Image: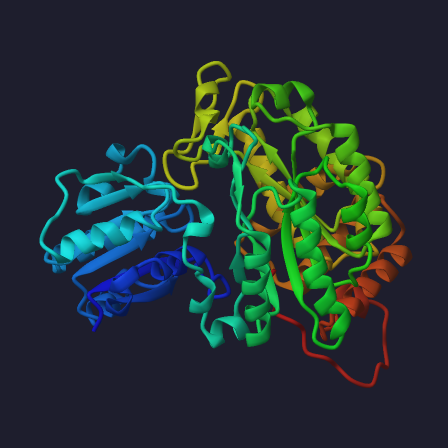
Length: 500
């Protein structure tokens, strides 16, 4: 039985915690006395506590994030009551700021703010030796990346077969975008590239095929970025029947020729870029200290879409200080014209410690006090308008980002994408009653009916478009719009009840 348990709740099973593996890798002589225990959000609190106590730990280190803070708070409260002898140590971004305001921090014995790679092991050593520090809140020590032990050997074979492998070639960010906690960093500090690639080679040899980079600025240093892309390209080209998938976050206005040449060689399905535009409005960008060459970012996105098979996932944020509905709509239309594969419409969140909070009074920003701390209203966007955008985002995810409506979506959006999809979103909400999920066939029916109601096309064209989309989806039902007027098919297929 371990003396030390390293615990967190992941958003999904497919997400394996790199942070816990970093802690475990750097436990030193305590590593044989430690164990990683991962859960998935949605697990009953009593079940979590039961499984933790079944390991009889003396110390529990819990990683707390915005996606698991509410469930972590319940876990901490129950664990503190049924096993007060267990020393609870909290860490992670959610408890690294405003610590004194959080009830779960008061329930825990200790809180480590900031990096815990070195500091957690030191604290565990003190506790096991009976020399607990006098202060409950401990500032984490930032170690040089290459002074740390590698976490990658501690992904299990099951992890490599069934889950995304999270990796980092650098830590930190040199930019100061105020909505992001990385704005508190002073710089991006790289790991040694050759050492890092040797670790990636070992993961690949063990069977890892899905790599997700946590770097905020993957393309900040072109030489390192090119070396990493060459590493993956060599493996893609050597074994096209056993492809590798790699996901990176790109700075939108930096794409030198060397990177372009490499990116263009990757086949479809092997490369994904997450690209944060957030806002095209230069006044908003200045307010939040975001440095972005909009013209260059636009040109880079257009080039990536035209000349590569990389999957482009581009982010916009609604509710930033100084941005109203017209400005956001114009930004959305500008981005949609570039035809990325997915547009992630997010609502601004006030992450604990992020400098965006300094604008709250000047711009009338009211935030939800509960996670995910989303903005509820600003002086430019009413509560009702933000609710409409949030609804738009949910429906956009189902209808556009899902890729289910490749034929019909351009007709639905023609002329004024944001305005037209907003109208569809409001109509769909009234039709479905804001249910959490919509059966797939019902969504196809809804798009078909909306094209007719909005006068986007005639019935014959709408039916042909939606029939093509439905056939391409791989579903095997026969929605009502496909059955109307069709007789003598000779067989009947069962409808699909898949929820989207």
